[in-house]
Length: 378
Image (cartoon, rainbow, N blue to C red; front, side):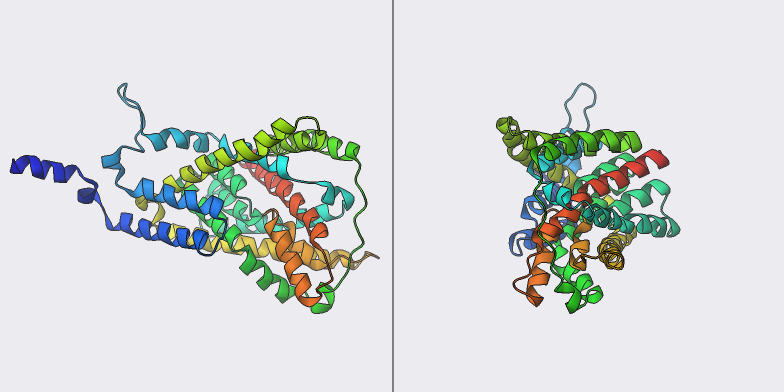
């Protein structure tokens, strides 16, 4: 009887629990606190945190991460993770984002495309720094994409190039996206004078339906021809947007922007969290990745602002440099933060519609940057 009791105790999770598992529970708790109490990206951080908890209840006991073997089925999380490692979830996320995104702000003022492109400088600068610090080309590229403030693109690139770093990169990417209300004002107020913050921009011109319908088609063809590896992300983003702008497939728009997007978000975030096992996540390398992610994000914000100031040297109708910070592709959070900063100086200065231009351009820019890496380094 005693032997049976001891055998049972040895089979419980308590017997296999490690200090690393407990530390990861603490990490999950911190993420849940940020998501629930601070209401920072809860739709993303809550399932990530729960995925961390699931993966750090000793998997040797639960079998939840086990692959299929000897005719036996694998664990639940192993199957859910296939969509992550096979690169299926991020393009489906982009499908939903495309169905929700209004590119007319960018089309009404095409010059803002350059601000979205300028913000991607943070990606390429961080790539060089990460390589200098000893990461491989593929690892450096995966880490650098954090600077685009685009979680699905970061995950897509890491799943292709550096799956061993996937959990750290994903958590870093979404952590910094959640910190936009902190980081963006800090950098903006450092680089933009109050006089510049008061710059008023002309109302954007109306955009015709023909322009809105042609844009996703032309963009897909052009980007695919220039950067073929970007097609899975850009193509699905533009397909979702075409559904939106066509105006005749409302059921498909609802399916893409609501049912598919919400479902895939849950699966993707739980998958990301479940890759953050103690033996993988708790390494000195993780701190370097978080540091490089912060560097990439700050450089991206600064690049957009500085390029806007540079453009003002030649433009008759000046651009409010605050909208350059919205070139990172965290839609629509970074545009809203730019609006908030502007209204602190002048409550009647509404720049949100202008900030949305570089903001949505940044979504395309980060996907193209990932495609460049995938094309060149592969």
